[in-house]
Length: 263
Image 1 (cartoon, rainbow, N blue to C red):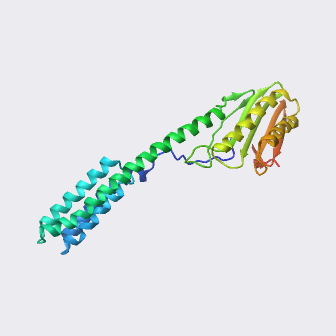
Image 2 (image 1 turned 180 degrees about the vertical axis):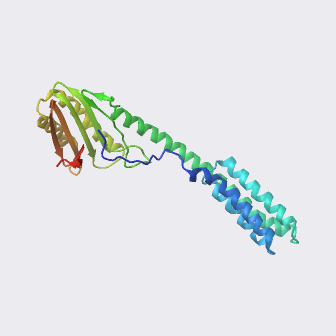
Image 3 (image 1 turned 90 degrees about the horizontal axis):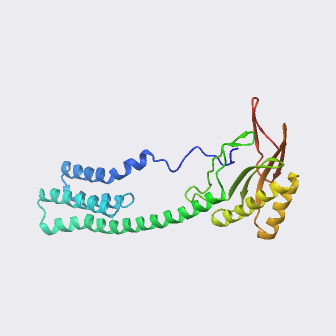
């Protein structure tokens, strides 16, 4: 069983861009130094050294930004010492990268704090999602099962998609569905659907009665504009499959002749 929103891309995997980005500020500082050495207007390029610490704030912590800022000021001081400008003029030119480095250090600290808050919120959301979508065994009855959940809001890692697969006295039964909306309100609705399904799947011999109990529960608890789409399936006996589609995307039958959408 594969949830409908299956994505091959994993946002948690690091990419080459994330590995190269921290070196970009140093490369920029070196490039500005090279321009200052090869041109006659060397001191005119010194304010561009501020680009280094400004970019570092996006990837580095406060200490990293300070190191990049010190590098920019030291490179600027060495280049300024080779010119004929007064000490006052050189100090004014070096004040730009120094001020930008200090401001970027504060911005980096604020970014780190927000990242920690976001990580805490995401951990709570993931805990709620994991409690809702309990792991499915590799084998349920005579079926081999594989599940991958990929929320539409990848950054939040929480959404309104739901699934459950369980053996019952009436055969193996499963549900795959999607709640309107996203975030924690959608998770609450998904928990309601799964709770009713797990109870009704054991109690009701008829699959349509399972769907009817879920519908009655939703009608009492959802707002008028909210809804849930789902596919409920059952395997009551050998060679027989029952499917009830409640406004969801049609399930796919994979066979030797290809993939067929079951309308």
